[in-house]
Length: 117
Picture 1: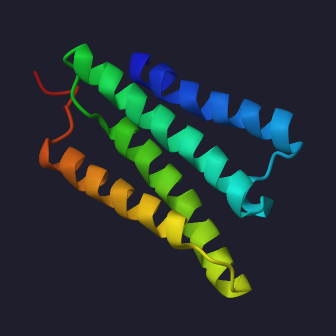
Picture 2 (picture 1 turned 90 degrees about the vertical axis):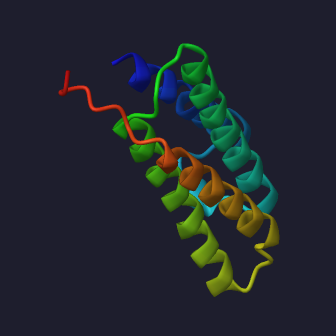
């Protein structure tokens, strides 16, 4: 439960930014720079929450990977939409590559199995 709350904080912060600055609930409809700001707030906040959990000697759990999949999925959907519309997507591709590298690094440390003692 603690991990879920810690990982939810960046989602709430980026959602609040989305509503207050862009006046929308849908990040897919945002233009390039606004989406990149939203996505960077989300990604950097999430990685900060992972780092905070590492400071408490916690290992990456399945919740961490679920959040990684959801955040990566949002980026991939926006990437596909940008390619279809013919927009420049270079920065988003770089962010997604870094996300992929971090995900691979996190998978080298297997998730903590809470049911085994």
